[in-house]
Structure formats: C-alpha cells, structure tokens
Image 1 (cartoon, protein in one colour):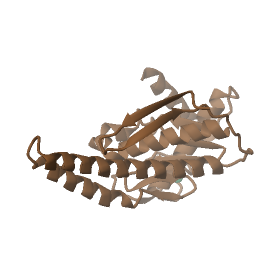
Image 2: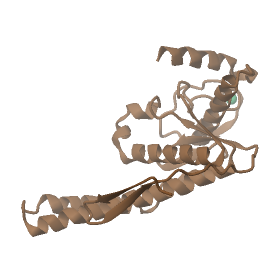
Image 3: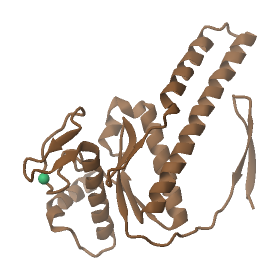
Image 4: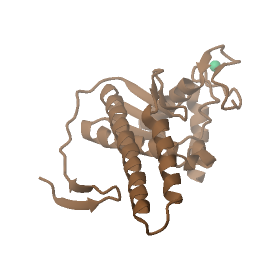
Length: 245
Ligand SMILES: [Zn+2]
C-alpha cells in the first residue's frame, strides 16, 4: 500500500500522481561476477567486460527539437496565447527527453545489477570529469541518474554497489601491470603500455581500474587486510589523499 499520494501538475499540461511505496527487497541468487563501470561522453558507460552502452539514440534529435522549441518560445510576444502554446511545447519536449533518459537508465542499471554481484563506478563528486565544463552538460545529469538507479536496484536485489573515488588517474594506469603510463589526451582511444605491452582500449582500461579499486576498497572495508600485491602502493596513496580531502 502506498503511504502517501501527491498529485503534481506539470507545465506540459499533464497531471501526475506520485506514490511513495515501501518495497520489500527481493534478493537475487548470488553470482560471482563483478563489474567496473566507466562513465563516458560518447557512450553512456563502458564496462570492464568491454561492453559499451550507448547513449539513447533519440537523444540528439530530441535536443535539437528542444532547442527549436525554445527558440520559438523566445520570440513569442509576452502574454500572448501563442506564447503559452510555445511554452507548453517546450515542456512536452522536456518531458519526452526526461522520460526516455530515465527509461534507458533503469534498463541499463537493471542489466548491470542482475548480471553482477557487485557494481563499481566512479564517485562523480570527486571525479575529474566534474571539474570540467562538461559537468554542466546533460551528460552529468545522465550519469547521476544512472548511478541512482544502480544504487536503488542493488539495494533491492541484494547486490553491492560502491562508488570509487577517482584519486588514481584510471585512464593513465595500465590495468594489467599497474604502471602509470602518463597522461592520455581525450582523443587517444587506444594505447599500448610501455611497460608490459598490453594494448588497451582507453575506456575499458579505465573500467578495469575502477573494478580493481572497488574490489580493494571493499576488501579493506571488510577488514580482511588482503590486497592484491601489485596495488599496495597505489592503495596507500589513495588512502592518504582521501583523508586529506
Ligand atoms: Zn602494463
């Protein structure tokens, strides 16, 4: 039974009933797969398994429609009936973008949570991406929404979701041998580790580093003190910086 119902009138002319419902957890059978997730700009996410989740295809077209609707609105005379109509049109396009993005986020999150016992992603509040101008873009809204969906579903299905502080430059470090290979401009999609010769896809490598960091933090949190030997140095450094932050 819903504990409360709120009716919300939206600017697109629709009314929504909003329910608050307590849902019982429905734990899924345990599995032994874990995944790291790299949040991207060209694609929504890339996983440590090499899976690429594209941004929803409607997106760019919808944004064009939104811009056009906003332009029309801006040249309608204030107080006119046409202006009211144009405003509603903007609201409708907004809603379509929002709904489609949310739907895509739910589907992506469900798949990640169902297929993996633990999902690790970057903590956006400390991510290097947040410090760029891109943070204000739609990409940021999509990422936060996706992470919220993953967190919800993980709680519901008895899975682990953990955010990993991006103190290590996950796109510079070789996920195979741990060597820091130096900065990689965004245009560099593929690189070869100078130390071990592994050829990396930039995003998959970052996702693998996120997976390794997430596992390590989880093990530390469990108090086992077990760390993969390769990553001891990186772990100590991350710990120091975290306490300083
Ligand atoms: Zn290497």
